[in-house]
Image (cartoon, rainbow, N blue to C red):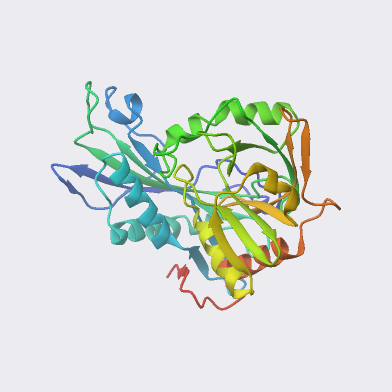
Length: 339
């Protein structure tokens, strides 16, 4: 294996040694299989290809200064995948099977877990797809669950630094009572055009308002939004937003730090009142927001006056990372150590 430049890894795909798989046939899940192939042999009429019957998750493993490898909140990822399965009629994978697959694939690819303080981590991608052939619009009878891993660097090139966002009104990522609360590929396909538009305009990411009224804050690209003001952590409550495990964790840490936590609708105009704001998710943890522009209204909401991450965003980011790497006690039971 060639030497990996851990400090300069991009957030992209790198081949690793193995992936793991379960197959669902005849009404039940089979045994865990190990594969060294990066490919899937699939029927051309598989429901994942025609009707979008697929779901995925994203989580990370970290190597601590004690050399132990820790996985962050994998039971929450299992629960979210189970929720998606119920939403698009796929058979649920038990938390136990999910956990076994995650721990096995990390152990098999242990040499790809980046060293402590390299700024990199091991990204874990569980994927569940309908593989059974179906021409009518119906759920498949056969499925495959596969987990692969790849070492990644920071999601944004600058790492933990502020980024500009732009409100895109021409497109919606998801609709109220649609699939926005599930982690399905269709939501991300729906964001590609708006994301490209934002990048072409020189922004880090697109910013969505609610699809129904275009009045309220929805999501920052594929990440949850939060704002800080008056010692309060405010994040949107919506039926079209994916429940972020990172956001859930940050809310707990914010309360521990003495902040009040509010989940509610946030009118666009309220952006003017936030002292700090961020986009949060597994990939970036927290991406502090420098400003949010609304070209249609010819307005710019400046969040960070000096262009730097705010005090509370920084504290939350450092606290969460310290738990992930084992630098601080894990009093919430969020971390699983790979034995």
